Length: 317
Length: 317
Image (cartoon, rainbow over all chains, first blue to last red; front, side, top):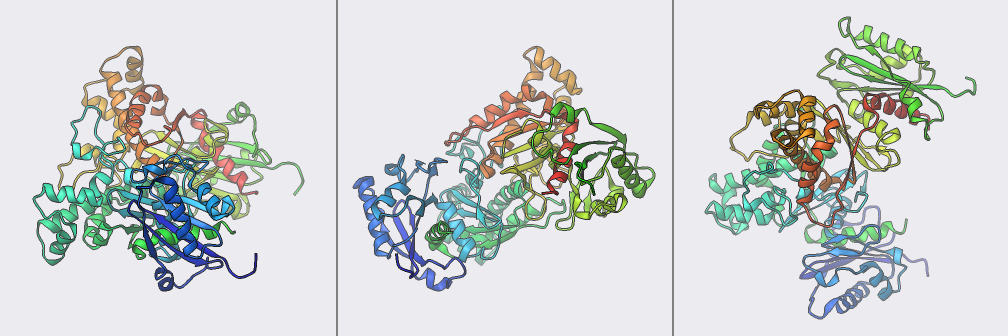
């Protein structure tokens, strides 16, 4: 091993694309954000040839990026803790049951402890906290408003995963619980089994469903463009969705005293339209709290690999 | 200063009574629980003569208990962080605005850093985690079901208070949020200003209100006795309240991956009757989670001073 800084690769494995990039050992401080963002590249995930093929190509992708040090990987799914095997992944079923860290360490001839695998929402949060909207902020929650609501929690500068690795599922906050024997709105029954989860009210999918139910454009970009241009039912709907999101933030803040939320994901780009509703919901409580800050995510689709790389850098400490 | 172990006093200041007791320096390990419990004594709070009089009597009470080392104090209220001044206390308004730690340090001639003041729910949680139901458990939340729902959060063996000292207000989880422009049930508007807080559904006060609305006995002890004796509307009501409490635990667990809840307070003694409803609510989610453990608190009204004393012991480390 020579003394030149090692190349630390981060990968963000999605159902259709893998995004990746690298940082150099010693960059834990403040690397140039623009330069880091410019390193984002992608390859197709392509699940057809099975798990072994995908893992081989992931290792190849890491090598192309110059990997000769720790590797970080973000994956949409639930992990077994301790141990780290992928328990469930709706979009990557072929990888379920595997210890992805061990598989990649083998293929890249890296020590197992230098391959760091985590949930995609956690790595994106860590990326934003390192180089993005949360830079310099030690305590925050990031919400990614997409098909569901992904989230990650940073306490005192460190990702907090909880005793069994399942913390920070803010999308599954129950904010509109049904009384025992109450009558259900089927739209509010969540895929997780519970009723009234936040992601049934305020994810991108929920927004599309609610737009359709209100007879409005179900293309969210179009909907938001109209809402920005003029008052009317589009703007009102986004206020209402923001208000529901605010109920979730109010509950989350009650448990964790959260002072900063970073909002990302496709639908997060409409934060300007959601904010009036969020603030109205937050303003209901008057209990000596300073309202939390709401910051739009700034790293876009690069947040995941950047956070994964940072996690890998940490393994050198 | 000689080498014999100092006497560390804990006080739990309530609106009508102050409970207190002592432990000896070096008892951070596992003091005899029965012996510690037997040290609980009380004095009347008596607010009539004002703040100075109360503080003088608190100092006198601590001296009677043998105080010659760090002192811990639990107070029902919200504190300013950093700094520690009491911002709000519904039942002890006369103390609002004061730095209680500095006041008592002066009166007892103790270094300021050896007088530790915290929220009553936090000290009770710390007490239960040290010598009560949570003994040996490193991560837990305690809920105290009383007039409201108090709560405290222990992460990795330490009280977690959040960046501004306001974490763990599980009673103010919004579990039955109202849509923007929805029609209100006035019973669900909380004193904090928000709508649908957990304590409006599952505190002792909420249970009394709900029993009255259902035409049942509003004496909770009587109600629970009937519910234990036979199936019927009493048992059903407690199932429903438990179900609502379960919605709050489901949400809290989603954020924090809580593996253990300790349930205390007067109404917490009905945990056996609430458990079926809580478990039904928790069972709705099927997402690879192990359901959290539910443990009845075991230190009763002594939890507060015991936790306050433990907090004071910690200040010696």
